[in-house]
Image (cartoon, rainbow, N blue to C red; front, side, top):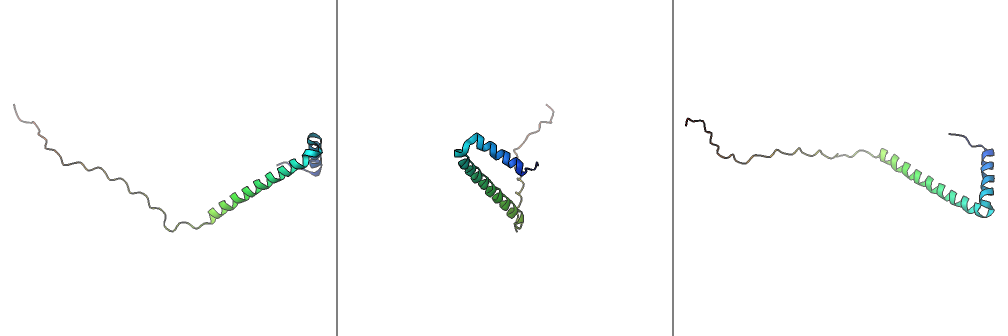
Length: 87
């Protein structure tokens, strides 16, 4: 990640002052600051949720696997006649 030095910050600030003007610049910086703060809070919340999820002890009784389905039982067989005799 590139490093940003004080000279680059001054150049960006001067360009922002020229482009947006002294009237709009404070409001824009305030909005950017609030947005960055909100993003940092959300990132912190996600980190804490993730780390607390990793630190939770495992469930004492894990869910049992479902029983395999039982095969369908055929109904009572019907009487079959085998014709094997002479005609």
